[in-house]
Image (cartoon, rainbow, N blue to C red; front, side):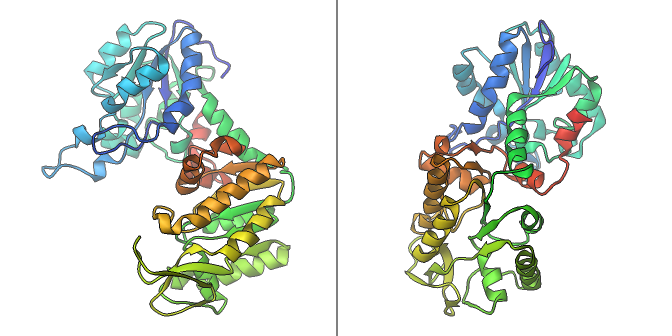
Length: 400
């Protein structure tokens, strides 16, 4: 972030899309904490900092009369917490591109912080609208994008706004730089063997990632609901497990491609199965290829945990994206937790480990292992697309 910001107003796109409870209290402030180094640096360098972010999807959850649910999605919920973290009284504009934002931004002095209202209260945000982006840009002299979690969205505040700042007046924040640097450690000449652990519900969500991984990984460990599409494609009985029938040919093609390239693909040998999709379901452990009718695989079993652990713990580079089972139900979270421990163990031995994607990040955080892995990404979808080899709009807008 080599730009002069002294006595300048700096517009910073952060990702403050944090989870809130029923009383609008923050339940996990990881994303806020991740943005603090950039904000504190700008303040130290003598800037006046204007923060903008989205929170949730207010346009998809409107009130019955079609109006925005301000009470639920306002960023005002974050002001007090952010003020404590920065030790600066954070000002708040109740509209990100209206008169209050203009007035408060104009009077903002060096060392002060202003938080703008939710950018997604405006339909123009997700459309990447130029006129809306120009209004945002008019508030400041310099633009800094530190929102890796939304870098894959060509939105007004993440991408279009950068057009209104000349070279030398726009930059990445420290978090963005860290995310790019750590992803590149896996993509460019990683220490080998490289093991990718891929979980989640559907193969269709991870097709491009799997295709790309077969080109550069040594081992691919597959868990979660998506494993059963591969197991059924190989002739296994999967009972009522989640299977994408139309993706079985693709699964076989991916397995054949991996074999041809000498990439080892590991599927769970056994599964924790249940008679219904519920926390209180009856459960048993059976071979994944032999799940009977009426039962479904909801987690990896102990044999799978041991085999996966052996692969992970003998790796020099590790990527983990997605859970091994229905992690939100404690009865089916053991597999994901076992993987988290193995990744931490491998890291302790000297492996480089990158964890990205909601539930895998949640597992590492819940178990207090976030400082026992090399890097925890703040961007699930963005990290996925970056690793797939896509050029992210939010990155391209700064790099040109």
